[in-house]
Image 1 (tube, rainbow, N blue to C red):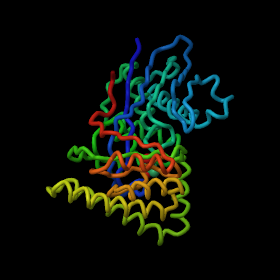
Image 2: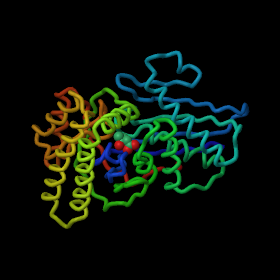
Image 3: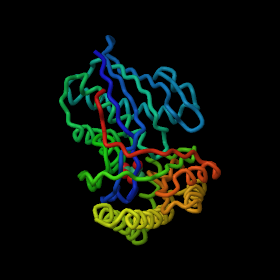
Image 4: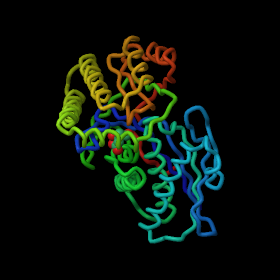
Length: 330
Ligand code: MEV
């Protein structure tokens, strides 16, 4: 028996980092997916094979035995810790410790780009392995297990990435609870800097500043939470589309400024954000943890001009669509 599961990447539209402190955030699944096959093996071991994992500058294929000897593969190797924890967690849930399981992964999502590659691989692995072991878990339950995996690997996580990857669509998320927002087509362009940031390190860096000067950082986080609530009001309002996009764009720009204030932007991210705005995007901001990775721009009138401006500024543009579907057993 062989089970194939897939789970999508995500973008955080508003509220990354502040969501780790219990503030709300808004995220959407997008149409890049990670695929995981799971099957039993005879030797009782966990075996992981990854094909076509995209890390900045290269695409790698590896199996667990060879990974540790190839330093270029360091980023890709991080993927393994999420997969291993996910398999161990599901084996424990299914009372199947010691059962040999081989998983094989292929992914369209660049690693470390802030698009939720780790959450997608954790969710798809939990989906495939739980089905292989005969567990009946809902996508919401799988999202919660994905959050556990992130906590084990990263130490801190809000859980928004595995939740949106498992359930799909467009969500408002706060302290482990989510609500679907009305689905809307967002005319966005994602810009990839080509370098990756470590979510674990960036979350720890913000935590360090917060602990050093809470009286300065807390109001920034509160303002980020207010941006999210305002964005939710705008998204669910009956304003006409032009006005709605104009307000969301302004909120994106304010949110970007606050993320920059927290220290998670980079020269390259800011260059892509400003290049997109100069080319006519009505809003542009970092998406995800920052420190490299991706930004996104809202460009209802001129997606292709904004994509060109991102290319000229040295980034890789991706015109993506929101995915209604989360985890899928294929
Ligand atoms: C990462 O996609 C989003 C962060 O807010 C971390 C988290 O929510 O776990 C930076």
